[in-house]
Image (cartoon, rainbow over all chains, first blue to last red; front, side, top):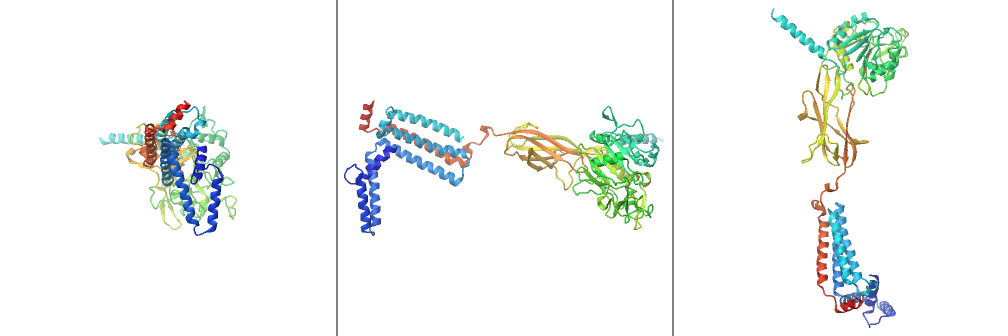
Length: 160
Length: 468
């Protein structure tokens, strides 16, 4: 995950202007913006939001352009799991944790599924290929299915 | 003519009935007197005892054949000590033997008299159980406000007392119930005792507030140093050992004499009263000899009190949080029969459910469905505590003037088996989390289907082929 994140951050920062991949350019743009802030304080807020909008737009367009279909699918599923997990935790905070085993198994099913999905994402991402020379995407998916089934079996048993 | 044999037959039946009435612990009574001929002055009292089925044996302390034990067994069930002039009672009635006699469930009725100094042996024995007598082993209780003017106009030493009421409101009225309002108890020339703090001691009759005890020999002129006065003085005292053996100390032996039974006495205010002595003597000896205030546990039952649960009586094991019902059946003896025991008004019979210390202490309620005229049942239903271990159902009922009762029934309490917990789907609070698992699993299945049907990009395929 880590090397990939670093990659996208660098790409996103360099994306707005010319396709230059060197580091100094973002720093020059940032000095330019600070200079602009100094020159006119009234335009400060507007230019700031504009800059952030730009950053987000660039990130999304870059993500949509460069991410493979299956990775997008993975991300969507992980976002879904985050929502489901957050709802369960919120319910536990608001309504109390009785019966606790039900909370544990419900919440850990979601968290565990998230972890397994994240692992699948790491193993199938193009950029990480050299880290897992022996693991083909098919093999990774098979591992994922087996592990998920074991997890579901455990959780359903534990919730009684 | 025809009637007389029939009548005598009925009289015989009645006599037989009377004789059959007997104490719960035995009917052999030993009476110790200075002189066996002395028994004539107690003839009514002793006759009453024989009428209730006791077999009396008379001995003097000097007698060679006198022994309370033979081959390690009690020879007598009860002993009455009438006042004796001898200083010691000899080797057969040492304090040690008397204590052994109590330990062996024997009962003792001991009487004192101010005219006769109490033998050393009995003084030591009484101090053993916590009863203190006047130092010089003699004393005289007088009351200048309530005495019999006809017999003790000058000495004021025949006390007239109301029949003894219970000392506490939660104790049964054993001694004065049924007494006529104007009846008084004559207490002639008696000795008062002071009771220690032992919880086994109960004063049956306390001296009135205006009474005091002094030594008539040394203090005949000036009474300065009193042994005790007022309600400190216990005229009739009871001691009940933990094994329910009883000792009664009666301060005035003369109270039992024929001349005071149903006699007429006159109070200082001039009113004439009948004495209550005969009935009191009967009740006192009945209490001492285990005919009154004796409790019996008929049966104890505890069982699961749950719908669909096992119907086993007194099971050895329960589960935590089981609903359980405990029932105990009690009877009380009175002279000749067992009858239902009713807990006194202000008292409560309690059940403890304990492991080391009680987890529950619950009042037992009268249970009419299991009661009869001969036995009354008391029961309570409760939920076992959330604690597994070895527990006792314990009824510990020790009250003054009632025989001691301590009943323990041991049971194991196990924890929940893993399949005895409620299922999560039964608990509505768990539904969101069940839904969480459901969402995760269905989301995962949908994800897997999409994953397998989504075609990987062309270059990705190429690269994977290359590596393979």
